[in-house]
Every structure is written in structure tokens, then in C-alpha cells.
Length: 160
Image 1 (cartoon, rainbow, N blue to C red):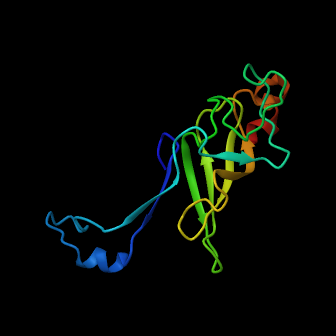
Image 2 (image 1 turned 90 degrees about the horizontal axis):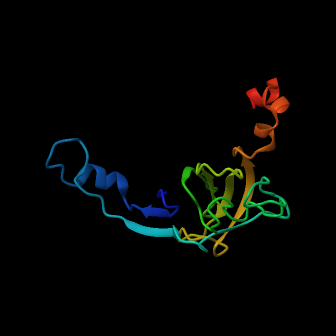
């Protein structure tokens, strides 16, 4: 993951052999190099990723979303269709296929942080070009729970 929103994959063949047989000239117990193939899964440019919200995922109301019509299909605060400041990644892989990447953003998005699924193919590319699938949104300073005084002082909000 890059701070600009890109997602890279690295295919390291025979990693066990490389860890034990590649030179370690500085004696730090790590090989001086590993041979790998890099793959760009998602570019860090606007238009690289739109999140399918399945008719849900409304973004919080605010200056950039006065009617509450915008969804988490885009990063509302930055006004871009891409990943912004990803900070969590989980690869769920079964025995029957390449699996799904689960990605979390930590971008400070006032309209709600996004968590989404990215099904991938065997080449570490998105199965569905430029498309992810919304799992959840949370937080954001425009979150109604955070802006409601009686809500924000309740035990529920403090614990949640």
C-alpha cells in the first residue's frame, strides 16, 4: 500500500531458498536481495477505483454533501474515485481461488472512513476492473453520532 492510495503486490518465488542461499555480505542475517515480480493491483490515480455500495453506503451530510445524496462509492472529502490513505489490508484466500483483499482507509475522511472488498484474479489484478465492494463505513467528524451532543455523551457512543 502507498500513502497516495496505490496497491502493489509482490510475487517472491522460492522465498525459503532465497532467504537461505542469497548472499548476506553485511552479516545482518538477511539476504542482500530477493528476486521478485511486482504487480500493480490498483493505481494511485483518480478513476482507478469506484466502490459498489449496493444501494447503501450514504456519506454523512456536510458541505460537500449537503443533501446527503453522495455515497461511499467515492472518497467524498477528496472528491476522487481511488483509494485514499489505506492502512489496513487482509488477504482472505481459500483453496479454490486467488481470494479477496479487504482494505481499510485511514484518510481522515470527515464523511466516513471506508472498508471494502477487492476480489482479485490469479495475477493479483482486480477481478472486476476498477471496482471494489463496500463492507462498511465508520467514523468521520460529520458522523451524526459525533455531532449530536446527547449521543456523544452517551455510554454507547463512548464505548463504540
